[in-house]
Image 1: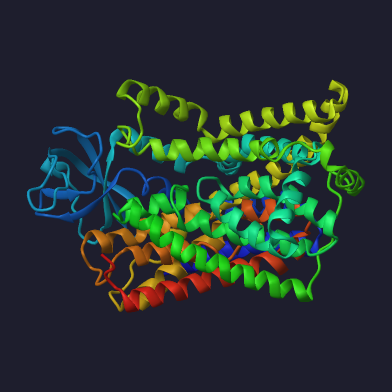
Image 2 (image 1 turned 135 degrees about the horizontal axis):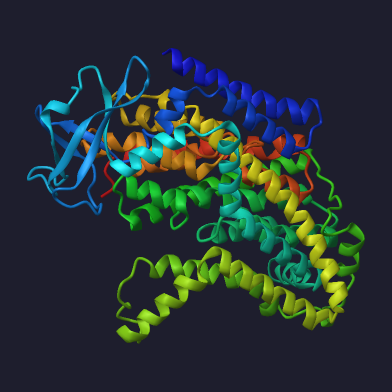
Length: 569
């Protein structure tokens, strides 16, 4: 209990440094996040680092069959009979993992469970598991590497979190910044807006933004969706002089729920695999709850827009004068609709194609493609469906569109791209700093705060799953990481058959629980604030309550579902 209290205290200190630094000391978000990362890393005890690095390596022991035999959760691994591993356990005294002995894989599948069985290699070296908790088996090399990682210094750990975040989003944000700038400068954003207004009318624009955000959010990361769509919101506001806040919020409300509920985005995909849920069922249930929560968010945004306004501010990549000049162009001077949509459609098609083909080893019957050609198609999407490559291709395509449409000199093009990359560079820095803080907070032992959940009613378990995911999301920022962590904690109940209802509802509760609370350690929050021109205070006022309310509404839909149809299959 003592280490849990200390973990909560360290998390509170980290949150206070960020909020206090940004709101009270008026520090740049990058400085506040990095400072909080160092503070949290310095306050994290060695035992917590041991649990984070060593405790997350290897595979858990499901149960001890007898004094020498253990049932381990390594199904689907590359282990073979005879492989040697290290048996470790959590020492309640030191609250860190100790080596207990050496084991060998005795069989790859137990007759009853199908899980591998490990047997002690040397009975005399076994220290015993009395009072030990959370037994795991770890390859020797992995055990040594985890111990070494747990002993790294404060600066290295913060830099690791910063670097990992850059690795995931650096190229994407830079290329998305170029795409957005080219969409505005070439008139493509205005063409899309004019076409939307011609087809549906100005009154339907918020619905179109929410629906488009939801559809794009299924195959594309939320940050990327917002990057691609916010130029359209800016262009529409300049044209109509109305409802900029509504346009921003409707883009968010669509994309954010698809990101956490509908595969193949990483969060819901990982949760469905962890809980053993059929991917088709996860997609269907995620669509039902996701569309319901997106509709709720649309209503919320519409009501909020009646009482609040958000001005369109200048940003380093585009000035208001530039936007005004773009909107005054005649229809004949704008690119065609399909050409305007191409920088958006290219990454969507490639990413979606890669996600679909990764799961299909042979062509569907209705598609007239031979097995040999199918292999080439899969290889093409495997290469060009990578999010970094396809976003780079889309950026190059948007630059070509700008060159063809406006015919700027290379010097003018270079100046335009420099503005876009300057704006994207700040966002990358702030987002990576948020990643550093998120990793530092995770290393304090967020997952240890809830050791186990009691067997209870479906409503209580779904609510607890929601609250668990919310706590992790609030602490470290990433919705996907929060979902994966919560699914890992709760997967034991599913595997051991302790649920009286279908685990799809647990997955939906986890997805909805990843929405609260979005704040300055969340890359999506920072992207919304920076790209829309909001201050951090405005984003906390408009974005955070809306996403939290949508998550709660999704939990309500999940509870209704598990109460009326506990076993949908």
